[in-house]
Image 1 (cartoon, rainbow, N blue to C red):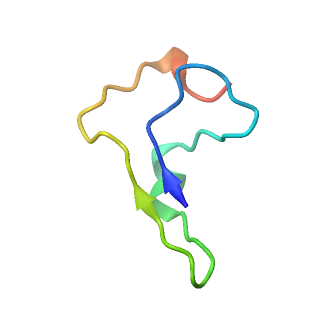
Image 2: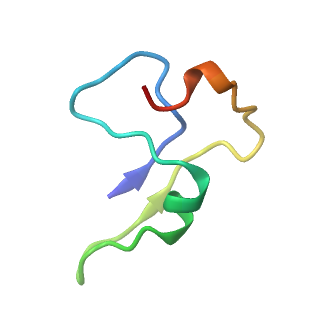
Length: 50
């Protein structure tokens, strides 16, 4: 499972997570979590979940 930056376009097969929830996210036993977010991306308020 991976976490990417917020999507530019809406995708019904993907879910945007806020910072708090992405930091607390735990994958099932046997899965691997890969954080692929760009650490230097600015979050623009109108791009948050919607």
